[in-house]
Length: 502
Image 1 (cartoon, rainbow, N blue to C red):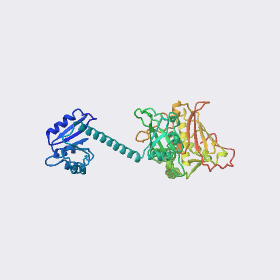
Image 2: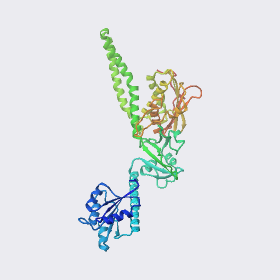
Image 3: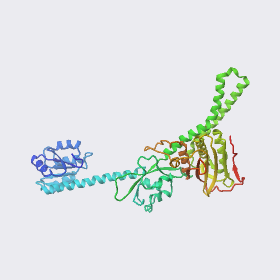
Image 4: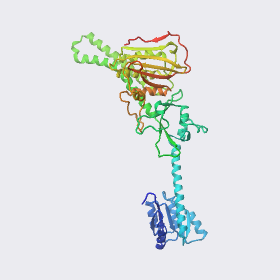
């Protein structure tokens, strides 16, 4: 049987009638099934749902009216079209048939042309009903699903958005003439920027890179992360596009929590644990060689390390919540830069680190929490050391004003040059279909995408450039500042750290 054929069930106790109907419909694209009694018809329709039933009214044991009533009460069979074949021409019989659920009647003896036309019309109407039912179910899914869907025309103008899509883009009833990009840019930033230069063309098949819309965090709500995908579809003469907006905020926050925990475990716990372990190893291996005063000194050193460890664990509990910092209860200021850099360098022990922050920026409050800025600086400095040929980069960090609402943090090292493709991809967080964070760009740590995540969610931007004057990298972070924190500082002209830090 072809998948396009309709199944037509004929129920009549008269073999001659069955034969006539089979001959009349033989040339039609139907699969005909015939039974001679009501019981067999009910058994068959419990296993196979035909597209149409031609049902004789007058049959022994159970008439067509009773069969019709049973089918209408049976789940699955209730919507099967039923055409009653009847020699009864009185209005009462037809009314009874309608009351029991019949869709139409044809009188015996029936005309061949009329029978074909009736069957064809009923099947066509039933197909339309089924299509409408599928469309209604699909519309219901679109209206209730938590994924946003937007349909645009060939000029990127929005033709339709489901409720989730309208909520994400904050569309009102009079804004459907906007293009998708116009609607998105009203409340979100586009990241990474280079992936949006080809919009609205889909990204290459198999690409690990994803277009992101980021609604920056505010004092009222956390940042929202949306993965944007132009769904591939068959060639459309109207050149309409279906755009899917998938919320990946939870996945991003989860990965930020993991990264934050690992970073602070490494940064905060290594030193006290190493000190404690060194003292215990000395006592374990050569206890009899130490004087009482020496043992007491080692015990005191271990006790101090345990106290430090206790305090650091408390710090970790505070810092690991950095991805949930929305109201910036511990906001960072530009003046914090030298101290945070010095703290980060205690672990790295870089020999040449210069920090410059103009006095007029000292009191500018960043839209980043202090823990977030601490993490960012630790990751950038660690990354510079990790990929430096000698693991001892000469670092220059400076804070400069862009305008009244943004500052730029620049970090320059003297390491290596990178291919331009890697410079663009270094910040990109990669997600598989299930939303799991999958890895990193070859040669770059997992931390750089997380640095970008912290900056992007605040409404900022990140860039990585090759130095034009020598081998090395320039990292630029454009960070929003609080509009009410613009008071000028009375500090000296520059806040500059020593050239050599320990």
